[in-house]
Amino acid sequence: MSSSPIRDFLRHNYRHFNAAALIAAADDYKRHLEHGKMLITLAGAMSTAEIGLTLAEMIRQDKVQGICCTGANLEEDVFNLVAHDHYERVPHYRHLTAQDEQALLERHMNRVTDTCIPEMEAMRRIETAVLDEWQSRDRAGQRRFPHQFMYDILNGGKLEPSYQIDPQNSWLLAAARKNLPMFVPGWEDSTLGNMYAGHCISGDVKNVHTVRTGIEYMIELAEWYTTTATKDSSIGFFQIGGGIAGDFPICVVPMLHQDLRRTTVPLWGYFCQISDSTTSYGSYSGAVPNEKITWGKLGIDTPSHIIESDASIVAPLMFAYILGM
Image (tube, rainbow, N blue to C red; front, side, top):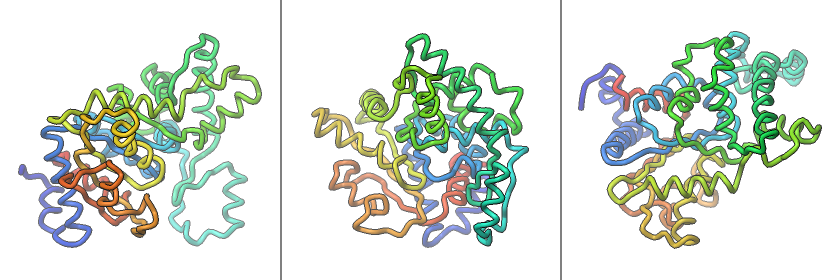
């Protein structure tokens, strides 16, 4: 394996426990890419944690062939892109009182752990741009997925004058430029999803179905998986966090096998989850990979890993290792 500063450091020092699991998962990720493709799932607040600093380069270097993310991660990468200078970090967030939180609310600063997103500079600026797209497609009778609206806005350059970070560090911009396959289940739960509902209620958008969601995303995922996965080139599953971003896409394989009888479609060819949640055998999201065998998602021989740690620490290290930084 080629030498690089981060890779050499990790291989020398990360020898046991979760540290060793990180190395094993990264090595298997690299091996899988020699003959397969990779889907990454983004849960939590990874965009606000600026995962784009390494994920954008992973996308540019074809280390990622698809992404499933929450609506929050979809939009928060763009919030950071256009409003980073107005963000405020709150390093003492563990000690905030209810009164401190109320003061942030009154300043329109929405807190995500140690980072406050400015409503006016981030959310409302994006709302203005995306509302134009929603209404334009609505008038034309055209329907688009949430990520396609964001791709259109980014590729169209509407927001470029407002960029406040190096655009090389935006993972969504990197994905938009490649038209990377993307799936955003539960988009309605996001800030923009809430705004969209409001604009439908107020009549600014006439047809609620102008934005495609949910079941249509699963249909799109099923077709992508069927045409992309082969016995010689399976798709791996790299899961950051838990929740819908991971639970939604991993179910596509048993659905293809059991409901559509596409039994020749291969199982997921690699699995890794980074999570600091305690493993619980009564909880799907916290279950060990072997439980997924019984659901027809993973096979006996699928390289499988769980790294029980903070994804904001582990994911950038793994990406840097894979990239040879």
